[in-house]
Image (tube, rainbow, N blue to C red; front, side, top):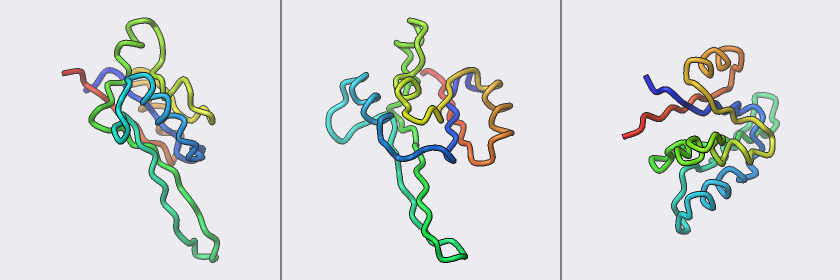
Length: 112
């Protein structure tokens, strides 16, 4: 099991894309490449109202900012999240936290 991960509570993500900007600047990725990508899903509810969900997905480029971790820092996307809906920590602790958040996603990473 991966030791570290990022928990994202999608109930609170507003789709601001700050995580994408922080990641791209941290790693100096060229345009079009990123360690995280926010995707918007728009749909109609049974009552006719429109709902938009914004869900950040970690890509294969994400390394959970291993360099920042070595300096005692959180991953750049977590640090700069405008709604503070991203959490970094031990996978075991985040899994417990996810149990109380019905729309949370837990991403893990095992260094190569």
